[in-house]
Structure formats: structure tokens, C-alpha cells
Image (cartoon, rainbow, N blue to C red):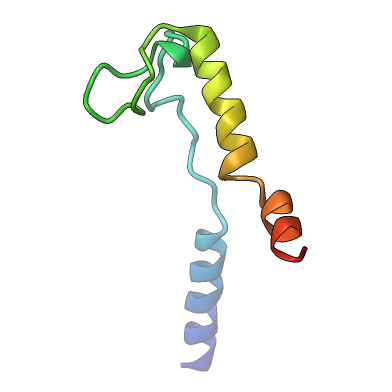
Length: 77
């Protein structure tokens, strides 16, 4: 009985180690990201298709909201 239980556990563990095939399914888009979505969820002031405005928005977002270094240094002064 113990041998059967150990065999089943071993088979279960070995089956769990198998890899599933990775297919290329998913969302694929050939359009550039700066063309963006044309709906109400875009950032205010940004027009889809304007690449320079897109890049400036990314730079401003990095400096103003996603960069913790200036936030930490200005609060200690």
C-alpha cells in the first residue's frame, strides 16, 4: 500500500514538472504606440499620432511622478 502511494506521488510530481508548449498567441499590433487609442481614456492634452508630444509626456511622467529621488530629496531640506 505504501509503495503504491509513493509511486502515485512520484508520478504526480513528475507530471507537474512538464512544460506546456508556448504558442505565439496573444495581442499583436503593428501600429506604433504613439498612435494610441482614440477613446476617452487618453491623457488630457495629448493627441493620438503626435510622436513628439508622446515623448514629452513620457519624459514628464518619468520626472514628475515615477521618479522617487527628487521626492525624497526635496522633503528632507
